Length: 385
Image (cartoon, rainbow, N blue to C red; front, side):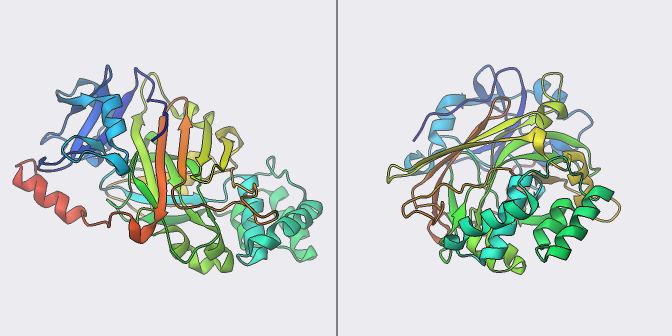
């Protein structure tokens, strides 16, 4: 399908895999280029490992059986030419709630305001982008959300008549946190990702997602694509669920890299997330996000999602947001970027490897039919729970 960057050696990796004939999805790790099945009664799910005091230590020491070479399994994970008799990767999370945070970078913030003002019409976006930039500038990166300076900025914007719900969550005291999809509904490396058929203006959102245990402790991170329908969300923020949660619209992977001596929260905060889109029409797009420019820290976002006000007994995977919103014209000038069916979306970082997915319509992606109840039954049959 395309070239990819394998996860760097030496890390503590946690993932999930499946193959035809296996009785249930396997919890896996990577050692010396081999993928090992470490599923056990002690930890039959990825969630169970993330709840441990030392997830990385457990993964590194757990006994396991080799299920194949990493590169071979990565290549077999591409849905269009997958051999179902051989292992392929699944999303690395299972029972965790899958949440997302929005408007956490200034570029994303301004583009969301543009979406709202354009009411889902990409032809108006360029003109509105220029108007807003002339009014409030394009660099709010030094403005701390919820600070006195941010509140003063809000006051000026309200007076000028351009206050927005996106500016409220971008520089106001409360972060935007929403449910991206249900547990077990995310897709992994190589899977097709879905767009709702009603959308004509949409984009990938290349992000890092952190994994937090039920106590709120962040134990690792992975790459994610928070697929977004710009026209649907632009029509009304109340359509956020329709814009964000559709069949195969949440991609995560290839693995959770657990925090250990080689990888920490500081690496997440300094990560550079790269994006490329390659279309069957010859169109190409590249961009990058620097996590150093995020306006709310990962710890702040996790605290906004969970705590005394909201518990998640199985923990969460939380998309952290993106600063990259593609505006490069595709086709007619002034109409901006939107996906074509068949686009290959590649998201990568030096520390987390590469997440690759192919764009299709949601009804044309494999339906989500294997949920939590199915997993529990299969693990019980295998006497793992």
